[in-house]
Amino acid sequence: MVEERSKLRPIDNMESDGSPRRSLRKAIIKASGAPVISEIKRKSPSSGIIRPNVDVAEVSKAMANGGSVGISVLTEPKYFDGRLNFVPIVRKATSLPVLRKDFIVDKYQLYESSEVGADAVLLIAEVLNGSLSEFVEKARDLGIESLVEVSTEEQVDLAIEAEPDFVGINNRDLATMDIDLSRTERLAGRIPDHMITISESGIGNASDVRRMLEAGADAVLVGTSIMSSSDIEIKIQELRLEGMEWSK
Image 1 (cartoon, rainbow, N blue to C red):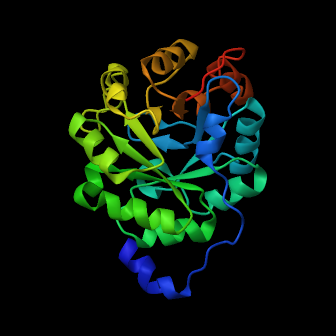
Image 2 (cartoon, rainbow, N blue to C red):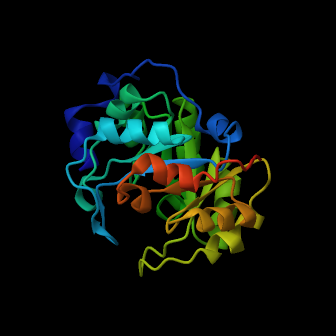
Image 3 (spheres, rainbow, N blue to C red):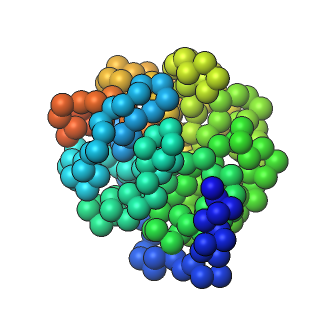
């Protein structure tokens, strides 16, 4: 799939969208209340169809109005019904930084991300392994922040060596799809203080958010519970623990 796209549109023919990048790192540090990255997710392997045919622009506006520090956009089509063109739609609809969340396996995808205006990308340590540092460096060269996702102690060490902008702890076991919030509690303390730690997956309510922050996370990334909510703005306000200050 990536190889086909690279032949149709070679890197030499690609250009950055040219707009100033928005820093998700700065947004998290400056957040009032618990920093919540809201995720646009139409379906997933674990939850099935969540919010099909959603109006991406309208949902992203609701996420911004609810107080999100950034918006994660799933662009993988097969398992998540995502589209790459969701990124510029969200960027046009809001002033928030946008994270492209996909299975990044080729540096070509980083150039794609730059072209559509992504401010950050997800890089999965388990997928990239020894190539992780190269991908973080290339993203940085393109002006894109990197969220490196980990799920084990060994992957945390790999992430630290790569020096990304964020380390994301995935509470979901990708083999069984089981959720275990204690994974953040177990791994967050291994991540240096100068790195932003984000807890991902399985966060459904304010109690979960509080638990993750107390475990050492600096922010949470929430998709399913927000997208399945009848009122996205109110749900995000609940998750933000309004009135409480959380900072690195």
